[in-house]
Amino acid sequence: MFSLGFGPVLFSRVDKHGTRWQFAALPFGGFVKFLGDADAASGKDGETISRLSDAERRRTMHGAPLWARAATVAAGPVFNFILTIAIYFAVIMSLGIATDRPMVGEPNPMPNNTQTLRKGDLILAVNGKATPDLAEFVSTARAVPPSASVDYTVERGGMTETIRGPYPFPAMIGSIALESAAQDAGLTEGDVILSVDGKPVNAFVDLVDIVKQTKDKPLLLKIWRDGAVFDATLVPRMTTTPTSDGSFEERYLIGLGEGLVFVPELYTPGPIETLELSVERTWTLVKTSLSGLGHIISGAISSCNLRGPLGIAKSSSAAASQGWLTFTMMIAALSTAVGLMNLFPIPVLDGGHLVFHAYEAVTGKPPSDMALRALMGAGLFLLLGLMVFALGNDLFC
Image (cartoon, rainbow, N blue to C red; front, top):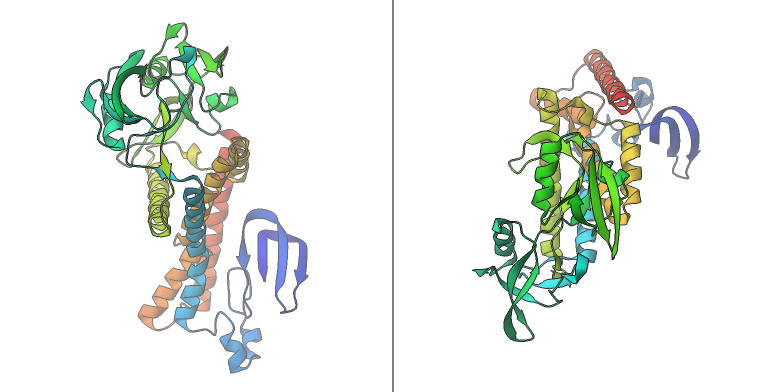
């Protein structure tokens, strides 16, 4: 049996192989019930198994060798991670990644026609400091004091020249966080912030400093978008964000990410490099998720960061409103989260079954039916408690 959801069955059908497929009322994941299982937690149905032949018993979960049972249990979480890797692989192959060269792929529009960089410009230096590669360009650009404009030494059409252009990291919106004040205000990527509470801003770092000082007080932003100027009022919200060292911090944010004055030149990597990048990004997502959970358990960050079905649905809707790429990345994050959760050593979950299999591998025999029933009951109680807690967060945080 394959079930999407738990509890009362809403719809089911049996295919020609005798497998039952069903949709259930409680949308908290799903389960697989094998031949010979007494329940969704894979409890043993001794009466059914006793009536089976040796060949039929081998097809049951309880009659299969230990390695086959362990591989079957691990397959679910593993394929969650494979799905995440596949999503990253498809996105990288379709969109490409930045080259190592600080070359302008596409200049971003700027207010008052101050954009002087052109497509194909290779930036050799910023304010006289050499930028041999994109990483060096970024570090050099960040070190430049905020100003209305800077000097770029570029190679253009085979000639080297120095031009005056916008600050490398202007007060331009490069990304917008889901369910943030910025998203609620209708801001979009590419918008340029001209002033905050009447004070002109030249660089994104100016905006960061203003938000730090303001905390949760309303901010009046003057925004430039495609030649038009309009006002937007945003109230910073307490937000949990990861830091460069892998930890987390809580501070007031309006939900904006910085944007570069140009889109770097992109290229499509080969399949091997793309796969390596996809695995690396998936592993980073795993580490960040585990770190966040650890910080919640230790009390370092708010437990409100643990979301339930309502919160996930709200985040998914917010992601969908930002376009297919953001929504796809949301799917990748959810797939990883489901895979991780299923590997937790909690009876009922796949991780709990793997612990039982490890016990059997060490002792030579599985836990007794009585112990399994007790552990499964405790695991189910813990899992339901966690679901209720997460749902409470959705309603009251």
